[in-house]
Length: 164
Image (tube, rainbow, N blue to C red; front, side, top):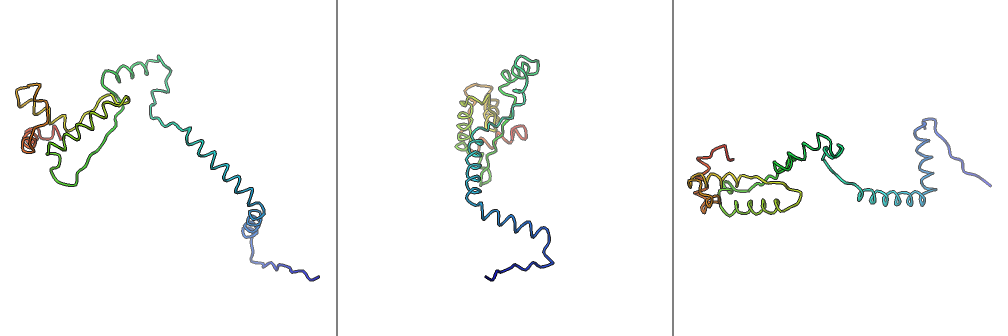
């Protein structure tokens, strides 16, 4: 019987031998490797469902501690101490002078305010409504979005950077 012998070159180094052994191991044990990889994937999906992301560092303090008590009191009185910003952009110039766009922002604010996690909201629209009321001799009924883009533009001309 004639055996075939592998001729090893002298240029083959440790890394090449290690890679060859690893490849041979992988081929011999491929079924076990696939089963272990699948089990790891199942565990990873289970673990992902257990993650709870939070940025509330105050929750780390013991209930009743001075820091936590002060934070909770301020949070309640000021409508929330953790800020969350939403940026709304438009593809056209002067889009936010149009009352219908301002009403959409107002509806978004109302929806956000209805969420239990949200303490309060504030937006550009609030500034426009406040200016509108100020120009109507502080009439509470005038705390509203003006009816025309021209009226919004005029209010912003007087309000300047204080609103925008």
